[in-house]
Structures are given as structure tokens and as C-alpha cells.
Length: 355
Image (cartoon, rainbow, N blue to C red; front, side):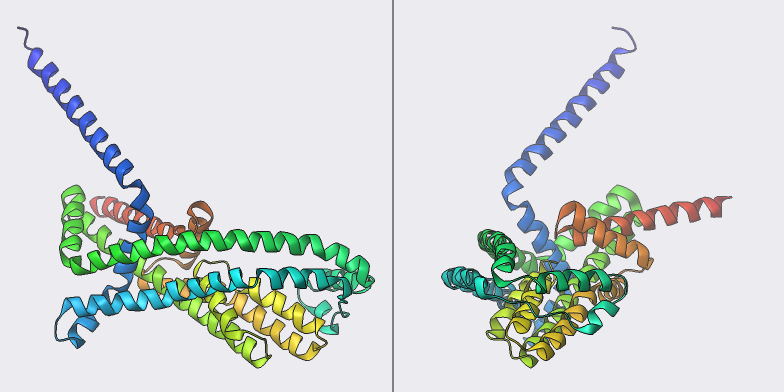
């Protein structure tokens, strides 16, 4: 036996051990694949709302079970309730929407207000386009609008199905959240211990930073959605829109999904002008502009309260994550950039100290 044989045996054993670990991790991920989205969402919700759970636990004389039950009720009321109302409304109003599409044959668009052309950047083009369609006879205007209305209805009905699937996914998320709430301290200790074992004290700091980033993003998303919904609801009620409460629930769902309130407010503006109420249509238009643009300023500021990062990096993380990973990317993007930025800053400052 040559002296190199023990080294060869060690290489073989190490290779087989790594291969076995990779297979084990891949198989586990494949088994958990149907639940991964719900697990990630549950983790985000639990991390973001953990301080609320602790306060509720103090109010209920230290009983964790009562606090968890209240948190579950809150989650169900905030998301599942509006989703259910939206799906119910869509299913019940399908025939009414189709009838309204057919009534577009008598629709006449009023001329644009004078101030539209003075809107910065897009005002002139918006005014010209509006005037173009306002000058069309009703029959030709209907021919232009019906195809778009049909596409919108088909998209809306498809959205109802996806919302139903999302609601089922969220119910699963609520169940997993309850489990995580119950043993949150043990889970947090395990994550911190793993991070410390992986990268020492710096790994523990990164784990804590990731939690702060998740909490900050959740604060930015939820609070911004509530502010947008409140502004939109004020406009709907002030302008006397029918079914304002239902439209508010739909707007809340759209804002939480980062689609914005414009999908509801823009048709409301058009409807008010169509009904011959240009004053209220203009007021609704102002509410729409404010509600649809405030998230560009409010969300990054709120996120920065949770994690200390340059504002441009937070904005890049939110927008880039949303484009790359969908809604859940709102949380993944800032967390990844926060961890990367902190590690890079620590590495650079460590090199300067050594020099």
C-alpha cells in the first residue's frame, strides 16, 4: 500500500459525503416544493409581525395561544376577507359587466378639461388623445372601445381564478404562520446558530440584518397599501361612486399585490365623465393621481426605517425584486441587497483596518 492511499480514501469519502448531502438537500426541496411559497410568505409575515405578537401575549397574561389566535383572525380579516369579497363580486357581476359592454354603443366621451394639456410631460399627448376619441361619433367610439373592454373582462375573469388560487395558498400560509408563531423563539435561535456556525459573529449580524430588512419591507408594503386604499376610498365616497365599499376592498387587494389602485380608479374617472359629472370626474382624477404615485415616495422611506441602507439601493431592491421574482421579490430584493451591502462594507472596512 502506497502512502497516497489514505489521501485517496479521504478524497473519495469527502466526495461521496458531499454528493450525499446534495442529493438529500435536493430531495427535501423537491418534496417541500408545493409548500415553499407558503413557507416563505409565512416566514415573512411572522418576522414582520413578531413584535405585535409579543405585545398581544403581554395583554393576554403571557398566554401564547391566545395571542396566536388573535393574529390568525387579523390575518384572515385583512387578506382573506377582501379576497373573498372580490371573487364573489366578480362572479356575481359577470352578466352585468357584459351588458355594460354592449351599452358602449351609446357612449359619448366628453371633451377633455383645459387643465389636462398643462400636465407636465404627458399633458399635451394625453389631451390630444382624449380629444381624438371625444370627436368620434358614438358608433365609431364603441367599435374602438369594445375590443379593449372584452380583453379587460377576460383578464378580470382570469384574475378571479388566480385570486382564488392565491387565497387557498394564503390559507396554507396562515396555518404555517400559526406553527411558526408558536415556536418562534426556537426557530430564531436555530437560524442564528446556523448563521454563527457558518460565518461566526458576522453571520449572526447578517441574520439579524435580514430580519430587520424583512420587517422594514413589510412595513413599507402594508402601510403604503393602507395609505393608498384610504386615499382611494376617500375619493370614491366623496365623488359618490356606487359600491364604494366593494371597490375599496378590491383596491386594497390590488395595492397589496403591488398592482396599484389605478385599475379601479381610472374606470371610475371615465364613468363619472360619462355620466355628465365633469367636476366629480376631475376630483376623482386628482385622488387617482395622488393615490397612484404616493407609493413611489412613501414605500422607500418606510423601508429605510427598518434597515439602514442608501435609499437608491432600497428602491433598486424593491423594483428589481418585483420585476425578477414577482410580489415576493419585494422582500427578497431588499434583503439580498442589504446582506450583500453589509458584507461588502464589512470586508472593505476590515481591509482598511488591517492596512
